[in-house]
Length: 201
Image 1 (cartoon, rainbow, N blue to C red):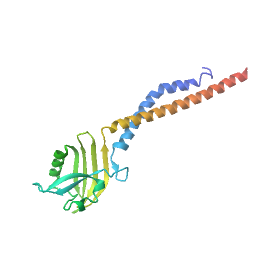
Image 2: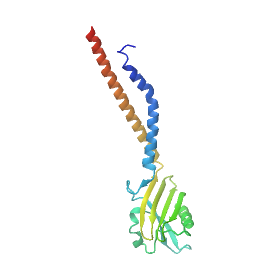
Image 3: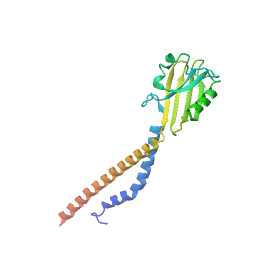
């Protein structure tokens, strides 16, 4: 093969290899996007104000309380506005809280765990799916009138399309950059070889 044709073999190679590279880039982008968007995020990352917290409010029911899910943004003032409420869930209340929230809010629990840290503090970890197939999760430390969020998670059913779209855009950008570089390089080599041939005549 002559030198004049040699540079274009790189373009042909890129065209042949690019589909396989695109496949790898696409699935890596899917994986990274899923981890970043749908994974458990630390409390300091992003907007955690909408993370949900469980609070027990006194009422006239047989249990003597009603469980509610409230956004973290309202947790600071909640005890003062609702006297007698608490963020602590006793070991004898866990099953009642789980069942009542499931019934009242029509949710499906994936995880609901309570770990006692001290006499006045516990770690609560829950993750559930609502009727719209959106998933919410929170992990936080709770005392009677205070909570400290550690991690939170929100997986929207419609968010999967955004992840796929971002992965497609990343894959397209990689293809454009690679093909652009190869084409530019080959044109430069082709012109160089053409000038060299003309110079010899």
